[in-house]
Length: 165
Image (cartoon, rainbow, N blue to C red; front, side, top):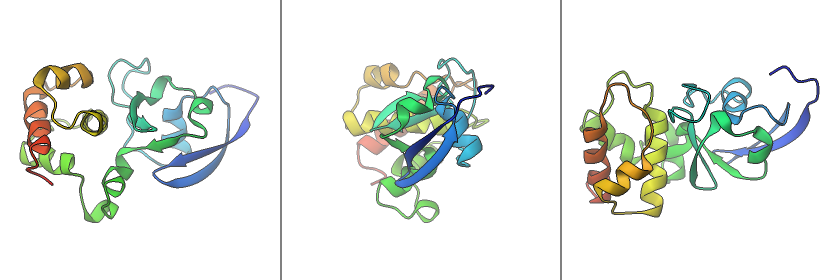
């Protein structure tokens, strides 16, 4: 970002506090990836259309490529790297139930969109524990070029049914 003014901002990411000196209008995506090393957050389109950059902001799925970092300061940010730990797991040692369902249902093809898709699905299940296909389709607006949407629905339904608790 070509901005001469920076601000010291405090971010709460995956339960840890970070102080960053960045331009307040810089997209949260780039601060997460470049400054904090959370490379599971992917850049796809840069206009909040594809969802590869989806993270949680206070439990809500948001597209981090279009969110100024200053708007995220003071809020709880959760990335794919913190998803399992937020569920009570130990990070790498334990996968989130959705991650296990994704593997069991062979959801990923190329995999690029999957971290954003998983974050959108986790936010959906947190607010709608037993979603219908229509609710899934309405909440999971992420673009998957491989077209794995039927497997995504199956995996979400399996988690909702308790198969991966």
